[in-house]
Length: 114
Image (cartoon, rainbow, N blue to C red; front, top):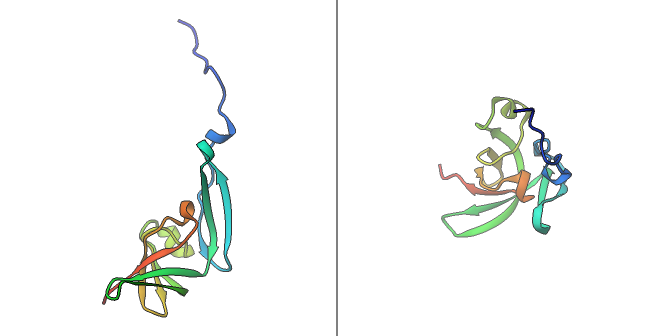
């Protein structure tokens, strides 16, 4: 019987954090330390994207014109937050984000063939 107590309190490394809501703008990155000398690079703002063109097999770095839609969250769609799966408009055409900007620190996408 009796009340159970945790054998220790939560360490700072185990604490969670706020979601990284990547937006359009000049590049801003934040580095978060993880277990085992690992690091997560949080991308807070970015205006460039690496687009992979499947027809030619080439990759180009282009400027994002606008965020068309984000099906991950209605609120993200309204606030134009970039996450994995968001559709963006570029000079090459529409593209889908394939990287996780909150963890990878880079924006990669594949060109939509229409």
